[in-house]
Image (cartoon, rainbow, N blue to C red; front, side, top):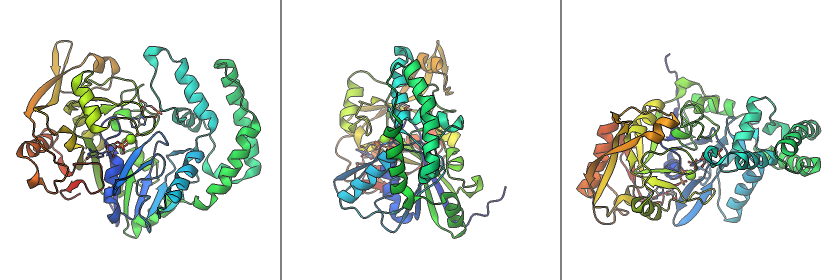
Length: 432
Ligand code: GDP
Ligand code: IMO
Ligand code: MG
């Protein structure tokens, strides 16, 4: 397949279990990009951007929103919670930000209030060992309706008459499930229909054919950045199922989630945190439940941007990382939060697992395999002192540079950007 692409289409994805710092990298990239696109997931994401000390957490809107004159899109693959969408827009306005122009796909599915009720009801009915620890944002139930062909799409909110019938049909089924299966109260029609009609009115100015706009933008030579949410190991197919989210978080999701053709892609950027975190349930071989985990959590501020939950922390898992980079065809790594590892006497890296007495460096998403896997570590020297003001590779302590080179050698992928702090400017750009 020969690429006839004129524009630059880059995709940025999380290479671990989410919260790698994708928001910061997207925002830092901002001035070069013409169009920013979210393509999967919904308001379960929490992408933090810090500009001159001011923090903004994007849950649904792309992290390029702070660039007036640019375009931000919500692609068809996203599940869109209209309440959250309008709230985020309102908050940006209240805080006095000028913002990018926003276009929403009419084909994005709508997260309705009953999806959130169902998400919470399902989670509370799961036995202790089967809980997923979802964000409760209605993501799973909304994607279920999409694939069952029962969903409401953004375009359905725009026609008040047909919306009435669609809401009535949906509630008939959902109320049956809520009352009969979960012992919840039924949801009254007006409680859904009236707000949904108002959401349609408020959202109408933003709805546009995102796929067509993107295809034209490619022909016009524009620079498009697809912003992944969550992380590879939370992918519905390629993650640690069932402890995953309900969308394709890998680069593949970028094509179905926007309509861009596969051969339009020009670069794949993996966002990798310098250690590992996970929020919610499911296996995590390098999790440290002791002092190290607590120290990373405190130093790294590892508390969920959406739910505030403490993130589980541990050393970098190279077995999992190599899998994620290969699976996504990563061209370069944006390595974040290197500063959090400062002042450690030594830094460990998990290079293989011991599974039932056998050493392996092959990743496997099977939950039993990962629960049994004991990480085998290589120990590297740490470095002392604050690196958060470093602006070049040369200004980093030699052992910090060694850590970066170690990652490059072990993965075969070069590091193009290093995060040394949470602010937009606390970044060493090596050519991203
Ligand atoms: P995302 O979901 O991948 O966008 O990541 P989150 O925003 O959920 O979590 C990343 C956290 O780390 C946020 O609090 C960021 O402000 C912060 N962060 C991002 N990059 C860096 C970095 O290089 N150093 C430090 N110390 N913090 C960072
Ligand atoms: P960003 O984009 C980290 C996790 C939840 C739970 C599982 C399923 O900020 O990296 P869901 O509500 O999606 O059905 O929950 O996925 N999860 C995330 N973890 N970062 C995220 O997004 C996440 N989005 C979902 O904690 O374990
Ligand atoms: Mg996050």
